[in-house]
Amino acid sequence: MPKISVEIPGELLADLDEHVGEDGKFVNRSDAVRASVRKTLDVLDEIDARHGRLEQRTTTTHATDDAEDDGGE
Image 1 (cartoon, rainbow, N blue to C red):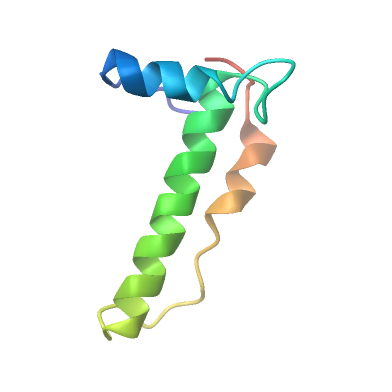
Image 2: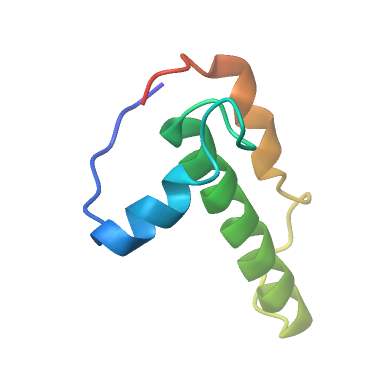
């Protein structure tokens, strides 16, 4: 799986970290970021489809990439 690097404000990182770990929804930051990106892309696809801007293609599901997850941050 390719790795990327992003810079985010400390306040946003603190919010993200509240959802990561034993008491959180995600095992690690990478899982949380991937889920957020998937959700955002799905929402953008829905908006584009409503406005007729989505190309004719099969519905993209961004949730299938976890099978290749290396679990790293």
